Length: 256
Image (cartoon, rainbow, N blue to C red; front, side, top):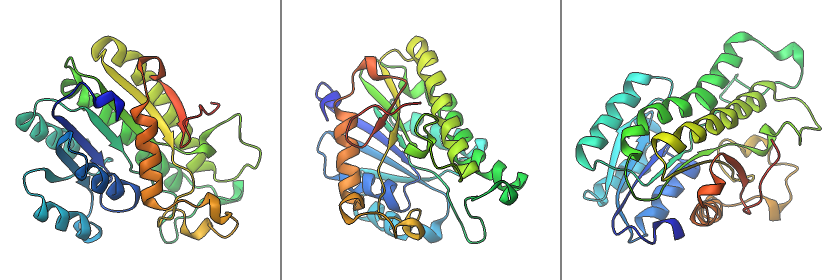
């Protein structure tokens, strides 16, 4: 990654690392010799079996932490632990997101809306990332380049919305984009070497997208490895003028 070229020993944090794209980032970063230490955050141990095994196989480079992004106390505790060990972070990627879970499904119509589901969408998809930004400030206050990236979605684009539906998911990811735009403005003052972006990964073959893959052409359904590689390429090419922007997996900027 180009932004790491001048850093001899970089530290990374992947939030939402138990499976899917987050776990893919952990695996990819373990293969990168410029990454000194990787912190990987998960919510439930039951779904983090592979991640925890990786940690036992890489005890000096990979540390697993419990973070439920809807629990600010857990965020605070985990980031305090990181600060006590490495002082600085150079790459943070928040991969946490919810689209469906059992009876919890994206809404097709206004008649499907309820306050409990809408609140959950915003708690997980929007508020968690801005709470991370709040507590990451001390770890980004250094003179090396750093990136804070959050996984968003193309359906968050207001200008690109021609289909409707998915009220809670769309709106919560749009809120994420606005939160991160705000963070980028404040970080320009408090953490001037940091770049804040949101990223659309493309449709990736994960549990999140699996129920909705039927109409996706094979060439547009990405493996986790491909998605991670593409997003790291986008991150690697970022410069300070890109902070606060919304990028697709191919490096193009998406409309708000």
